[in-house]
Length: 326
Image 1: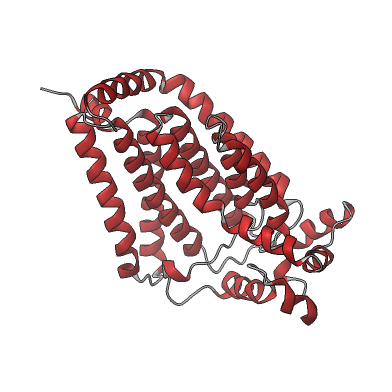
Image 2: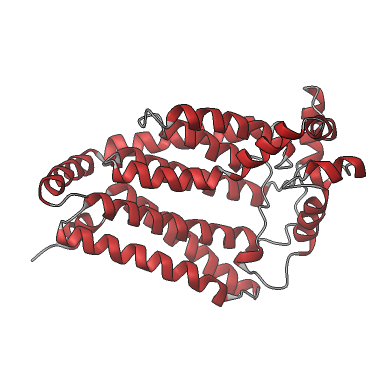
């Protein structure tokens, strides 16, 4: 008779168990806050995400139980876990609204000024080069699509260690940025500085002055009903878009034909974070620091706990590639 530990190890890899633990803690925090605050949530709106995640988990269990494809099992498990985590953490972020703690924005603006940076000037410069402005906008919007592409490519090419590293790094980074924002909120310069009408009409900003006003209202008044489809990115400092850009560059290194493209694309994401993301300049190095810390912690975790898991995965990949083409 299999022990509970052996059953868990059969269906979950060490990194996946770590992700599951983080998710359960986040969901527990969500539940406690919901019960204590009385905040209204449109639960039905989460049904699509939950059904899709359940489908991913089901496919993963089937493929691991049958031993048919470790690659499919890993891709589907990683997708399901990451989706549940992002939904649970976004809900946690909203459950702390209104957040009446003093914001860091004036201090961040002063730091930017000491570096010679002004957000209005940066956006004004960007709109004077329409092609550059459009490219930066598309680069900014590409972040999440890049992560999806990497989950698929790393998983189906057998780069399981890299895939697990990316998902755990993003999960840890997401938790750090949200928890930091809960204690030290910031909403970015788009909420502080109005842009000239001539700039607004040309910029087609993703996060502009109007968006900044919405964030300010959410910060100080909250929302009557939490609905995932209407959720806004609340966090300015540190920049999570920067985290995702660095993750795209770092974890695409092993895919030689993809890495140069992702490198160029994510180098464009960094200035896009400023002009299209409505961020302070110092949000970027802060995002870099969060990524570096969480990537280091992930690597240490994998070296300590995932060596056996890596061996098991390698054997399963060899077995399934010989008997069942993935």
